[in-house]
Image (cartoon, rainbow, N blue to C red; front, top):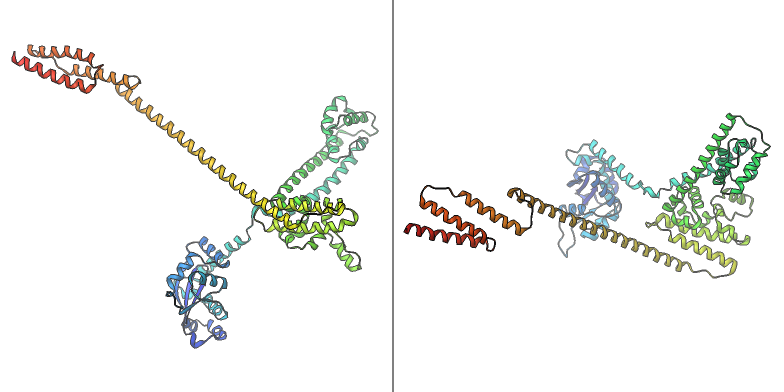
Length: 558
């Protein structure tokens, strides 16, 4: 049985025919020894056909198809054109050797060409790869290396490329920065309190919030300048008029020392920095919430954006968190306590980062471990849905949160919760309904846009038609030196003009007969001009011709 070899290179598809295999036999060692020598290997394997790729994009598409075990139309046409045709109802007298077994099975299913992939075929393909530039004419080794390098870069780039909106690295960096900002704002706010309390110590007891304290320290400046006129301004900052009056009263009887203008300016500048950091922290928190809703909506709706971001950052990525079992996720963040317990043979920790969730705080002391284990289970499910699902929805997270609420009620009141199967069925149905509604809304929007475009086109056509009609009427008016009027009046005026032109075209003659002839038609023309208003133009022309003939005959008889 003849053996053909399919070799996929970076430059194109190639088909080789292996000869003399009966003499060599299925001995891989003999083939392995003959591969290195081109003279021996060239007698066994010869090139049958070569099909180059049209572009780098085509090469990338073909490489992706081969890696996924699919046969493209281009490969099918190449094989059908260059392999011997198999008659219907008969077995093929050849086989095709391929490197990928999945591609071989796909080729056999579609084209019924028998394929094989074993060590013998792989050794032959290794020799083909080694001497590929020698088999094809006008192919330099440098060109082949460039093609391989370009295809390797594009293939790796396509495999590594992720969705920009689903990159969890931004969440990791944002939660780290949020933690450092909290520490820095706290320490800076305490420094502002300590610094400004030398000047106005009573303000520290009145205002407890650090952000409001910094804003008031910036607006008050010198306590001796505070009057009752500043109460509305302070009330806008604090949000309470009574506190504003209290600040003014405390400033009047303050025990603090006076500061120089330069010291007050430095305090104000430092307070402004604290205010700016606090506002940036709020904006960063909003950014983190939006990114968590894009990357892990189910995990965020189940356990919260901050706790979910901490779990992702501690695991390293969302995919790593999805790979973790629920038992690992439960104690994620409590590794020191875990290893200390294993070393001292004490009790292992019941929860790690998920302790910051509100569910564990609401549970009783005896049920904290049970609810932590249940919550870790649901968080594991939510992270896997977020990581591997293509539909970006938070319905599963909402349903899982309802299950945790029901479990809390079961521990406290004994109310039986719903089964997990029923909850997941309801979540799947709701997601399908939402996707169908979104598709319907999209179709309606498309139809509305098409209708609007059609209406606009019809309006434009009507406007163009009216403008064309106006242009034609203007041209007629310019030719006749007359204003634009209805059609009936136009016809009448045209008839009068034709009659006047005919009267002007008749030349005067010296003969009496001619004068009589010319005189009689003038009278008749005057009469006809009155008759033209009642009769059509064609009837008038015929009647004029017959009367002229009669008058000519009478004149000749005289």
